[in-house]
Length: 196
Image 1 (cartoon, one colour):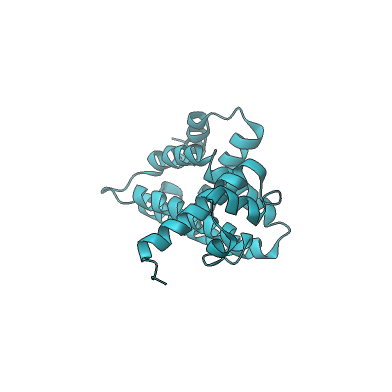
Image 2 (cartoon, helix red, strand yellow):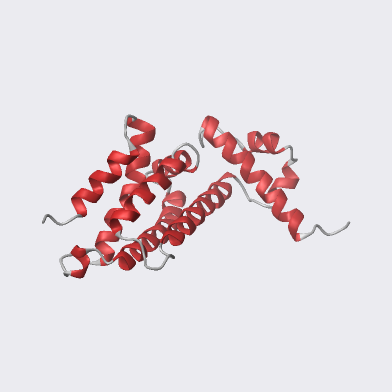
């Protein structure tokens, strides 16, 4: 039997993950079975189980890819020289959250909800979430905002608060509605800007 190339292996893995994402977005985690994913991916059980042991492993892979994509986008914000100020960074973070809200953001809300009762998913969140916080902390460090420069707060604490604004925005946008990204960002910037 011929060996499958690495490119073909990656393509098959992506096919499974794309099918699972579509199923999860339509039906949620609990209402989606492995059979649903296999049908959507047009694969046999034997074909899929070579790549993933089951649905939990697929959820973990999707969460990992989403976090990797988010952290890469945040890391890219810190690259320019001179580094962007916090007032420039906040609207970009909110815009990123707005772009994510209907795809990865919807899945993220599902994962966060499941983490409340599923120890496996909770462990996944505890592994992945610090990567996002670290990326935001680096943005804050490079922006060197006045509260950090004056020693009033630490980079870690301010970074953690700003990192929480991304899921906070996604939650409001998806569940409550009526949130304007520009107003959301401008309000955060105003709160973080020292009064003259």
